Length: 284
Image 1 (cartoon, one colour):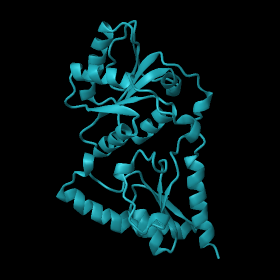
Image 2 (cartoon, rainbow, N blue to C red):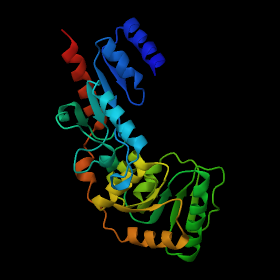
Image 3 (spheres, helix red, strand yellow):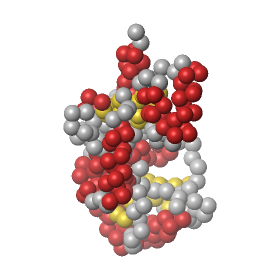
Image 4 (tube, rainbow, N blue to C red):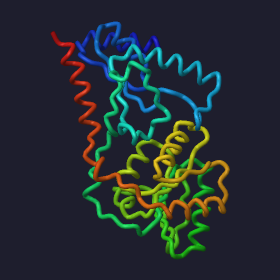
């Protein structure tokens, strides 16, 4: 990290940089502070814990270090909706008395959900291409073979796509995934923040396939469940019977009204205003 900080410090000096923006590059904070330059740190997770606040000694040490370190940042930008719709809520801790340094700008999405035609004609499934998930796609295919009244629109990025049928359509790359999402009744997805923001904006109840190696996604899933916007299950222990039950449960959800109120939230514009404000306050 120190090598990175020294390199960034040199860049700041050589190019007379007015503001440093970084996310996972923690060295940028040290470099900016050493040169007296404002720094905005962008993150959707500044606290490590499992569902329900479970923790361990390593996470406790890491959380202490991160909180101390982020106090060096001039401002912290969270690319998520303000409360009560902060999907990453259980991954974020805003220290008491430091609320003024944190801005929940909204997602950095570049889509206009109002231009799409909406219906509820299929089950959208795209929850990652890790090899162990192929079995879950095969389970969906088995369910589709039995439930001919359901149409599955499936996107799998692994090397081998499950074979298509009349009501189980496998896709690799498509030009516009949102066109497919807009036609869905529900969406089967992983717990990534951007994916969940998209599903909320398109007002699609979600069945989240949680990855146990990503506690931040498990926390996102818990928030979605608490919002009444979907269900979740553990991707490592799922069975066909459990998947069928969760599908039925998710399809019974009434879509959460979200688009009208949140479509106008422009996270990129809001973050830009925060950053330019830091620059303007620095100028003499």
